[in-house]
Length: 598
Image (cartoon, rainbow, N blue to C red; front, side, top):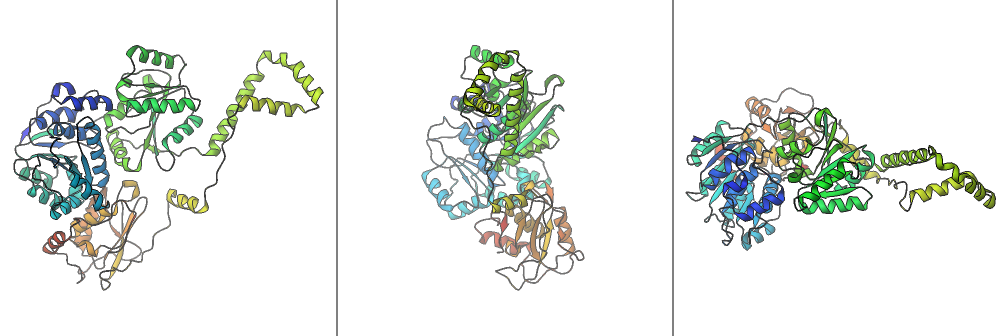
């Protein structure tokens, strides 16, 4: 293996990328390559194998997608690039990134394949023809064994987050896939860490790779308060509108991903009565300068912008930065929120995060070295309280004016002629001041069942789960015990993650892993009774979703010990045989909170 030298400061235009990719990059808002991109793109363009060590959020998806897309022949409707990812969420994100970068490549198709999605959908698209396949190891193996995924025309293969695949017990599957690929194909392996097993994979399957290691050491200003809102049923536009009503801000910078989105969002905010305007690369430079000047002098309150045009923007009035669309790399996040809290001033940064974007949130937190606090969307009652306060302040400001006396005779005459109370006249004038928009929002009560469910979900100390294990449907003769593991919803765990890790560490067939229940910060799993001490210790040390399992027996009782039950086949040969029989690779139903007993 050879080490790469530190790349010079290159632009994307210096890297011989095709014009369609450069055009897409300009629209996405990428101004200059990140360190991992600058170090990885040239050797991958040259056809070299690559071993990259970089954290999530450093821009590594573009580091392998751009050079390998440059080598794709879109006229050939066969898989030419295969990307293996540990989770379906990552597979979907990588596929979406390929679609963004290849939007100007003619007749280009990318397909994510993963467990939990209908085979019919995947089979139809594979039959139609795709150039890039992004998938989880188990489902990729399944299609290869069925003959529905043929890799005869494969030019390159990417292993993304290889250490996570090792942690989830997929490394044997990865080796199997690599062994089935054509000789001479290019391989790029990316991993946040380089344990011995990953090095072994690289030595076995990579040909004199260039090694790239990126150390991320970035920090955000201490004067910036960082919060995130988990996007759920409430639409982002409604959420932003509510924030604008309750957050005391001077000026606000709202980041979106595309130029079109800047215009659309600015128009919608303007229709809601906010002084907002778009700022993107399609707007002439002089007009952009005038827009920024209007923000500085208070004629505008909100700018909706893309990353490119906001680089270097320094306006003292900007008190809030809203990441309406989460950035795909940590550097972009750092640059975005750096537009507030400058020169020692305080600032607010708020990030909108969808459920499948949680891993990007964790990557940001890991890189900046601090947690980002969650926030609650303001309720209708919160908004109404703010509206009442603002309305009262308008009246108080009007009362302080000296010119009010000119209206005294008119109002006195109106009162005498119609015989109305002064309060009635004041109320009528208040309604004229308010206009057609209702002063208060309707406070809708949630249905009792939904409110109870939300209350349970937000409860930080839920009731303890039952310690009674459920019997195995396929093997009712096997005695089961319930265990607790210290990883849950907050860490992004799925049942398939736990099954893969336990099956790998305990050398246990998945058919003998029973009911799984995932809670906020822990999970329960039913396993055969009489777990050996060495297996118990191995599971305590195992890691899933960057969390140590720390397995413990649920309920009172001594640490489990004793011989293995006679039922489960736990030998390596039995495990290998089970893997060959099971077309789905690793078991588990990704994305569901519960895993029923097998």
